[in-house]
Amino acid sequence: MSLVDIVMPKLGESIMEATILKWHKQAGDQIKMDETLLEIATDKVDSEVPSTAEGTIQEILFNVNDIVPIGKIIARIKTTNSNSVTPQPITQIQPPIENKTSNTNGKFYSPLVLTIAANESVSMVELENIFGTGNEGRVTKKDILQYVNDRGQSSIIPIQEVSIVDNPAIIAPHSSQITTYSGNVEIIEMDRMRKLIADHMVRSKHTSPHVTSFTEADVSNMVLWREKVKKEFEKREGTKITFTPLFIEAIVKCIKRFPLMNCSIDGDKIIIKKDINIGMATALQSGNLIVPVIKNADQLNLVGLAKQVNTLADNARNGKLKPDDTSNGTFTITNVGTFGSLMGTPIINQPQVAILAVGAIKKRPVVVETPHGDSIAIRHMMYLSMSYDHRIVDGSLGATFLTAVAKELENFNGERDF
Image (cartoon, rainbow, N blue to C red):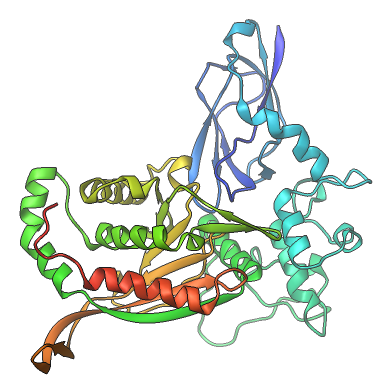
């Protein structure tokens, strides 16, 4: 008989913690190997966590809605057969997490909180004095982000009086009175996913100095080719051909020429990613957003990209994505043109350094240069915009890369096969 520790699993490179949504088992219950133990959520995806052992639930250490760091022990299972235990790789990193996230007084800080503190020059003394709203008074992401925001104002609001996520109302400085709203209003509480998205966006802006470059592309050859082959493509391959895989194909070609666009930053180190994993922002029926990732996109042909795009998009809308489906992205594309926008200024999906937005394709009269002189023609035109981390991507590189993507789209071979 032995006790097996169940820890919060690793869910992706940029994910440092997860929220417990539901326990499927309670202390004293029997559980089988790989049976669902609990449901968790991050700012990217909801997921079920299976048991890595068979036996009796000895102890559950966290409650529903608790935010738990990756690698933290969340439950213990008493087993009667040691052979039933499957090693859990994440337990190997659990002790270092404890060592790195506790101060000399034993107060726990998640790796994410410590990263934000370092980026915002928040000293350990300041950190120890922040009022924590998390489990056992722990400082959460929203706590330290609120502290950083308040610290930059002339009148500081005590952190315990306001939460940027939990309180939709505005609280006056040095007062716990909730401001009343005049006029005919409706107050809607954010759902859990919207709170997480909001926090993720704020954190990205706090992390990266954003710069956005714009260009346009004549995508007439691509539009006409797709119109010509789409019926045959679907009949032969069993999936539709949208513009997204064509955009991704062009981006991948340009990343190979400009590998610095496919990197992340760790302190003063630049981590260039050899794998090209393209995230594609996908709108859900709820209005929320999720970013499934096409792994090793450079190793897929157009048919492979189309099938991956369609499968991931369908799974996202039907709530069937797995944690691995949203992890380890190295570059993101978002199609703001889906809803009619001509262009946008997207927010970087951390820890990446760039995100490219494609706008709506519109017919416009443009000047066309030919060997016989200039003429005006009706062409399919599209704006592209790219936000990038100015800590590592300078304007020259950002603009050059964006222009290269536009040229790839403009030079699309309208006679190609698929």
